[in-house]
Image 1 (cartoon, rainbow, N blue to C red):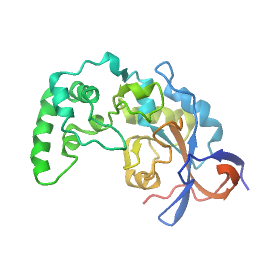
Image 2: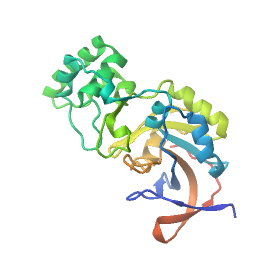
Image 3: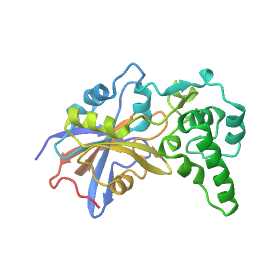
Image 4: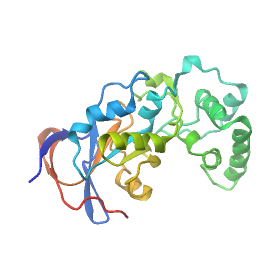
Length: 256
C-alpha cells in the first residue's frame, strides 16, 4: 500500500468525482496569499511538490498565475474610458463572477484586445442577443478577455479590490511548472458555472476530461486560499471533520 496523507477538502466540495468509470480525487492545496513578488514555479514546488505522487497532475488557478506575472491591478489605479463605462452596463451580471460587468474590467479588456476588436464584439453580441444568444462577446474577443476577473466582495483580500487580466503565455507557464515538478500541469479558469482550460503542459489529458473532473470547481473561488490542486486517480477513506486519507491507486491517467 502506498503513502497516506490527511488533507482537507473545501467546504461544500466533494473530494472525489467519477469520470468514465474511474474515481479521481481533487485535492486543494492551501498557500499563503500570493503576490506579484512571488514566482509561480516556486509557489507550486513549495506547497504541492512534497505531496505529489507519480500519477498525479497539477491544476493551477489562472488568477494566481496572473498575479505573479504582475497582471493584477488595484481598481484605484485604473481609469475607465467612457466607452468602458458604457459597454460594462450591457454585460450580463452573474453571481459567480463579475467578468466584464464593471468599468475597470472592461477597460482592461479594451487594453488587452484592442478598441476595434472590443467594439466589433459588442456590435455582434448586440445582434446575437436579439436572437437569444449569449456569450458571443467573449467568443469574439477570445479566451484572454474571457479570463479577466474583477473586484467581488467574496474574493480573498486584497484582490477583492483588484481587476486581473488573464495569464500571459499559459502553455509556457504550464510547461515550466511541469518541468520543475515532474507532473503534468493545467492552468484553469474555473467558477461555479464551469471550467475553461487556458494552458496545458505535455502529458495532460484532453481539455474535455479536465473540464469534467473539475466541473464543480473544487478549488473554490472565494476565501479558500487554495489556488493549486492535485488531481489523482485514487481510492479514498473519509474521516471526521472533513479530513480524508488518500491512498495511491494504480492505473495512471485515463483519457476520455
